[in-house]
Image (cartoon, rainbow, N blue to C red; front, side, top):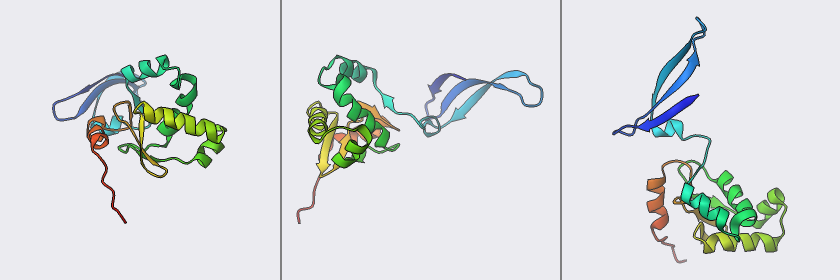
Length: 149
């Protein structure tokens, strides 16, 4: 079990872990050294202040939070853009079109997601992120430029 993770000056991550030596059977304390990317796999970071706000918000708690969790499952590490269409939500969450659009509107009005173009959205990395949040936050803050056909 990893007991503590620290990040050094150069972005290297250090942590301690107890392991069993396969030859002697002894429990040994080892130091793990790696880059943040090696530790940032298979989980989503949800920030504490954001979590508190979600719980207190009656429009999100127990309602639109289901859509937010679906979105969190869709995003890939290092990316804040995701595709979302009513048909996918209906299949996976079993909700009506009205419920989907109400939840989507709630998440948009709270600044959690924003629409880029039809069915393509961005998740605000100041709330939820997979990967390096500081670089993604700058991307979210930048206005999008669209080509006019």
